[in-house]
Amino acid sequence: KARSKPRPAADPSARRSSRRLSGEAAANGGLVDSDGETDHPAYRDPNDVSAMTAPELKAWCDALRADVLRMAWVERLGEEEMRRLDGAQEWLAPFVIFTARFGGKGESSLSRQNLKSVLKQVFCLVSGAGVTTEKRGGAFGKGRPIGLGIQAEQVDALRAEAQVWMPQKRAPEDLVGRTVGGERIVKQPDRGPFDTSNGWLLNHPLMKIRLYCEHLDELKEMGHEATMRRLTGDGAWQAAGGDGAARGGESGGGGGGG
Image (cartoon, rainbow, N blue to C red; front, side, top):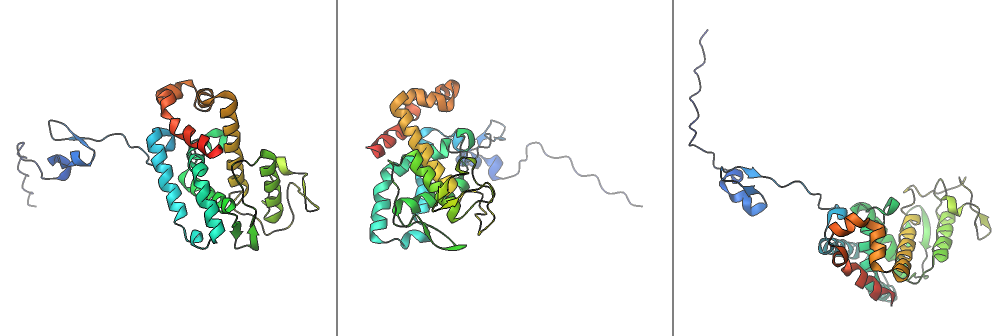
């Protein structure tokens, strides 16, 4: 049996011509050392809002808000509905920033997909067009636009109404026992159609509005720095640059509340 010929020794001076080794990678964010090897920076999730600086978070949220406003449903809004939605952008912009960073469970960050879902429903409610679903006719909240001054009890009344209009299979605990239009909310309703989104149709978007309004109340009562320290923890607040890291969100929120 013939033996295979041994491969010639590699010429140490010869290098493959590639984008990674040629230095071209440096133009794409890689760092090339003196030996021509690329030192790749640690991967950073472009949608991880908890790791963003204040300017990065604002830019990310503004882009997402613009995406929602380009959706097909916006083109179907009436003139008055469009006027309301346009006028509300002054407070909706900081609302999006706050909700992205602190709108998740336990005041954690919210995923891009969930935030985008929330924004669509909130924008529908703010415009007065109402929220629709293929599972039943009509639009929830049509002709009853909500605004920044809405109180917690008003939000909860809307959540209770939503639970009757399109019930979750398990009602939120704080709504059980309430009566809406003569119908008492029970823990496990026995009739549908049901909200199979687990609350993302109406309950969660309404809760995000309530959470933001409570945040603005806290800002007025405790001040911006104390509020942000509570939300992020002293260490995270200092690491983010302290007061200067979140002033953009505060100034926007103050403008919307006026």
